[in-house]
Length: 308
Picture 1 (cartoon, rainbow, N blue to C red):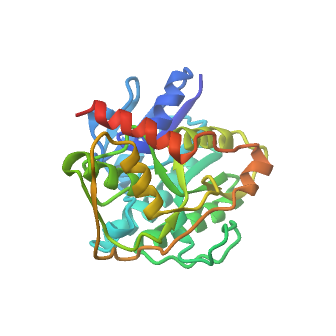
Picture 2: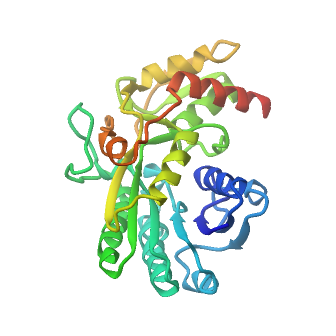
Picture 3: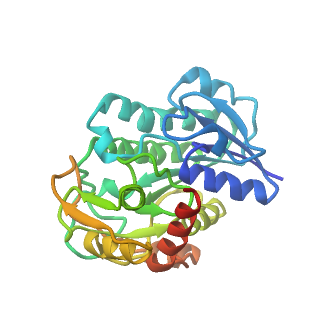
């Protein structure tokens, strides 16, 4: 049995990762402020500390643990919301990362995995983006993630093997269907189920790269065991370009009733489109996604409808 810190286990991605680790017989500890997650969603058996990851007093409570790895998943994760309070966004993303890296160094944990984002890239030409592309984010959220990646790079010199996982559009069962400002798939699906109407802020020609939650967790477990003791960033995506219009069509196909759609307005800091080149993680670790968008949406819709 190993011991892991998984921040944000009351949320979608952190909860899925914590649940997988616990199912494998490991000990899992989490910090979560419950700002977007729910305590009842924390996997059974997970040791829970309520508070902010950017709070030194909360992080100090973990100094007695000997973590085999730290997974920093928690943090404000909406580009749109980051414009409401940029200072809080910086604290919850960058400041928290710095404090947890200091915890890793103090407690002798040499494996740090960070949930970064596709938002670090900004708008790019319509070709799959590589990890060495220039980072030119359009949101305060992306700024905090870029800063955190640099903290990871600096702490490499202290012997901490750090991995930045640049997550693209993650979706799947367990996503928060009540938060209509975070998660493109969950926002549109929740609108379609609750009101039989989808309001899209932006053009249907915008495009994304959607990745299913189980594939993300698989990747997170793989990077923990990579051999190189260095800093590295990996795109976590499918490499498949899907327009917003195509996503809307798939959502409508999975529902047993008619759904109307209106395209109106825009979102601050929204990217026109981005698709990942995933050759780096495929070549280095042998990871490839298993669930395509059609199958993933089917599973997520069935889960969402059961919750009504």
